[in-house]
Image (cartoon, rainbow, N blue to C red; front, side):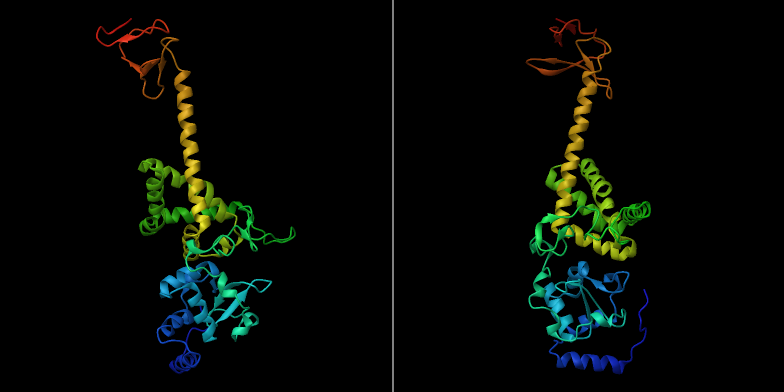
Length: 332
């Protein structure tokens, strides 16, 4: 990323800080705003603006008390531009004029932002409702019950070339994104390991099965989701990491975890059923006993004892009523 203006004089900074103080910006907020003004590139997207999906992480990084406090400070200093959606009811991003030029969207006073707008901003991902949760990327408009398919955030006209469609290129990019995370020990420990821990704790799984749940979540849910988002291809790796982190913190992220847990259970149940079917179809020595295809263990069913293992050296079970006598090592 390259700023529009790569140098700024001390005099300009002093003048800017002086204006902020006149606008009632507190001493504690000034250095935070300076960071944003000069450019926190890890929280910018490819258009060099701070998108709404990164507001929560910016708030944490700069230690604002709430996300609304962050936006109020940015708004009140009057040095940043805001970008709103088409009906101008919701903020979609803000930017520093040192990094992005969009004068038509710049807001210079409080009346430019409609009353009540800050209420759409989350304090934490978990505390917002389904209606107002900006991290719930499947929510359309103000209806929490009207969901979009994973093929897009917002419906567009059929003639639009910006529709969110999975392409071979976007699918490959999404796979590569998660491959890079898995290859980086720090990113893996920060993002993937906590998910494995969650599956292991909440589902009571072994580590192996928890890892299988994660593989299912990545391959069946996360990769298709990101591959279907048009803006994914425009984001760099850092922006994608912020996006993924915010998604996992959101209500929709919890929904994905639950879906992955349910999918993992179904796969294990299906595998167990197939294993039982294979066992019951495999009786090479006698029609009255079965042999496990994987372990080679012989067994039969008993009304009182349940499944009874048969020693390897035993003769084939002669009838459906025959019982293996462990003392005489014979069928009785």
